[in-house]
Image 1 (cartoon, rainbow, N blue to C red):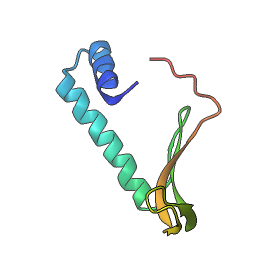
Image 2 (cartoon, rainbow, N blue to C red):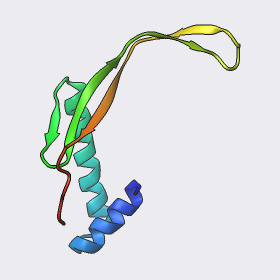
Image 3 (cartoon, one colour):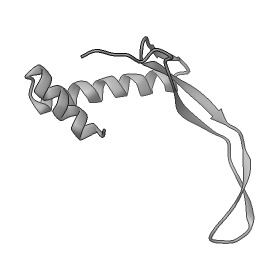
Length: 89
């Protein structure tokens, strides 16, 4: 499922316009992203946790140059699904 299908599905089930649902989805995702960037863990019970994960510096092989280069460390948003993901809508 992609964002467009999600918006259409929620729109059909709630009777709200696609524009309204798209706004809610955007606000929801922006809230998660902002909180995780600030170092918080976002827990949605019965669904999962969004958290910040630091990927260490590592050596990778460049397919273009054909030599080994160092990829810098970076922060990533990670998700871990809840053990119980049964959600009824």
